[in-house]
Length: 152
Image (cartoon, rainbow, N blue to C red; front, side):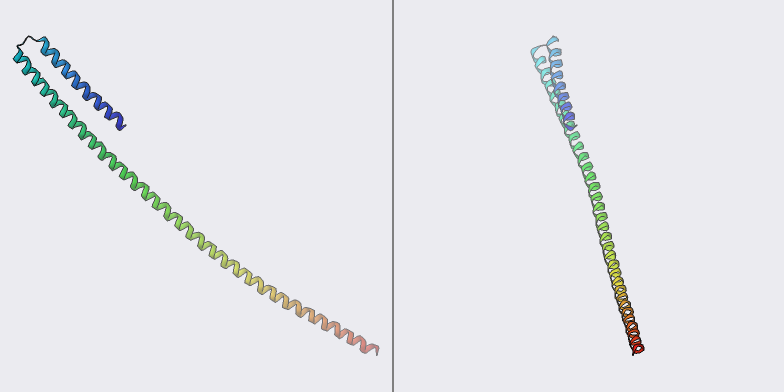
């Protein structure tokens, strides 16, 4: 868009300059005047054309600076928004990572507690089984002893 505006301004300046020169020349050549008057009028018209060209150039330069300043402000604003959004995303990722680490630690601790509980249950069950087996063996021995005593 800047190139289009620049081209339009440039085309306008060139067209105005050429149109001014052609118009002034036509007016001077068609009007009956002496050579001195004609040269004087040509010099005046050339000076007017130079002044207008300088004025257009200054206006174009000022507008260009104005647009450049506007573009800088907008790009700065956009950069700030992008930076802020990026910082927010980074913070959210850090928070999510921290939450996942905490959940993983909690899960690991919970799993360790379950393993400890199961190990305790297995030990208790093993002790109960061993005690029950011993009691059964003792009962069988007592019966064998009792049968032996009856047979003798």
